[in-house]
Length: 290
Image 1 (cartoon, rainbow, N blue to C red):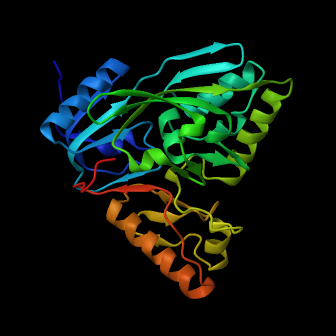
Image 2: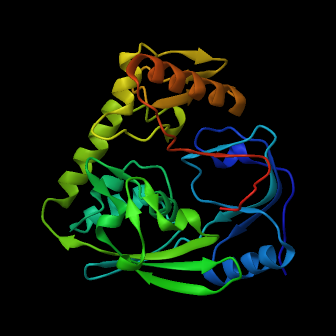
């Protein structure tokens, strides 16, 4: 029997710590459990949103009218050079764990504060590496509960895009094919060291706000426009990295969205570049479920 909770504050489940209450909320820690919940949503025609570690997400100040499903499917096993992992597993920890074992391919994941499922969904990346690069297969549950196992070549990937973004359902597991190397741990430490030095790692944020335009840096464009440190309420363009908006203390989603619009307008006027969103802004009511 499914047990839902009401009124869970979504700010408590996101890295930027913004968001009102979920009408209904449930944590799922197994593939079978995810099947059951998605079948319920399909039968009852209920909007749902799959939440991982809460990065890359900005919920509405009023919360979410549908069902928020917290993906806590967190198994992980390594057999030779193949890693099988649940979609709720920490992507950052997976990068550290595999590098420690001398396996190369996911060192860049170190410091990316999302889940494995979220990283696949967004094709997360850093320093010219992307999640899709060493992905072998993905286990996906469709909206009516059916399980699909998709090989890498059955999934479309591009910069911060996967074909899962146009599908209803949930990523529940994945396999990565890595390579045995002696310098994996050093590479992983270099990645995390660089991230700490160049990004507001200790501040409350949702990660990079904008996608990098072709052959350009969104952060560099924003900085060039003199927008570092610009505030609306408690939402601020980071002084360390201009492609981050941080929650200084009590920022609201409406303040963050207003600051996003200001940045987009300014960069368009001064540099002639349209900045496209990387984070997901989740409205109170969904027209189409994720």
